[in-house]
Amino acid sequence: MTQDEILYHYTSIAGLNGIINSRNVWASDCRFLNDRRELVHAIELFLCRFKGDRHKILSLALHWYSFSQAHCVFSLSQSPKVLSQWRAYGDDGRGAAIGFARRFIAGNKALPTRRLVDCVYHNHESFIDSVTKTNEKDIEALAAMYVEAGGAVNSFWELIGHNPEPLARIYAELLRVKNPAFEEEQEVRLVLSIPTRKVQTRVTNGLIIPYVEHSVVDRGDDDYLWCVAPEIWFGPKCDDRNIEALRAFNQFGWGIKGVHQYDCGYT
Image (cartoon, rainbow, N blue to C red):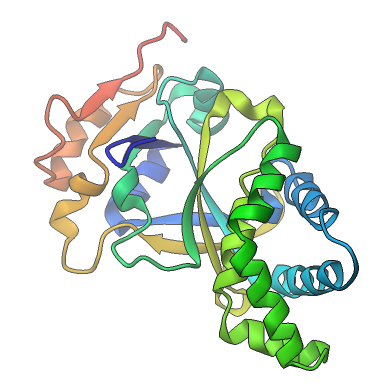
């Protein structure tokens, strides 16, 4: 992992056009991803590391955070050459993969509730052990809030609402746990934790999906989208005229080196 790394979001041509025009991406509620059990499994693994009061406190905290906050994920891949991604998310090869710079995708304002994390596909038990160690200060902070609240659940949840950062950090780590069956995707997740009252909804395939918009370019910096997204890959079935159409967006950084077509012979 390097800060110069490019991460790729597979989408349709309509999705690409929408991202370029709005400078926004959509992050979907994690409970509506491919495997709804991933987060539940990660939380179970995490909580079983604790006994007594610590288990009770963390269980209460995670329960509150699960329902008061929407944990939305914008999915990216480390590679623009994953055929299964083109099939599933790139309109069966007719779409595009927009490449975002790792250092810029989270935005210029570093917020604890906005984190970029790499998925972990194997050795989940060991990974959760490391989470309990690296987030020890966050766990202690939650315990201190519980003591300050005098054990009153509503007061405890209110204190968390005023200081959500410890839970945001823990939650983002738990959202790294991913089913090994999806390892080929090489997924990196932009995790955005926001109050549920701020989410929007859309309908896809008969399902209402909560989501949040994330601006990848600050207002007034529209001409520099190419710095945040320096690469665009078009799918093997994509109409070549889409490459020419990029000129309409006046992003001079998308020169010869910034635009590619994944010609893998898939027709």
